[in-house]
Length: 202
Image (cartoon, rainbow, N blue to C red; front, side, top):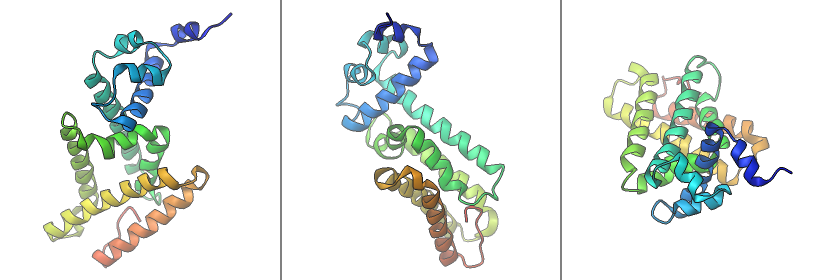
């Protein structure tokens, strides 16, 4: 007879860690870093506390691993999208793709981590890197450096906020509709800010 403990032993290390990271993201997003214990993560994953510690040395390591996993996935999606900037809505699609894979980890990176003293720098650096990426796409099309910096920050904030709001209230079967509506809104804002500019995100 196959028991739940047998199933757990059969999981490969990378599969086990993926399971624990998803459980940890849910637990941390629900009660915060200080309010979450390794026992909470174990309960969420349906495993023993010992299994959690066999894979992650500390709660800090586990939280950081969640952030690193989701930020790496976002970077992968952005990199792939850059190869085909003609695809309409690629900015929002990249965010939403990762958000659908692991909603709690996505929220942890963009919403919760910046409020945690031990991880606020990681979250801030990732956000700054995303802004720099957006700035590189704008290029020299916006000559005013102050306006350009504001626009790139606003662009990132808009796409992330739109994605978070859709995670809360949207229908997964209507994701494409959201992507197109979000892209239309972004294009309209760019048109208002810089009438002569046609951004790749439109």
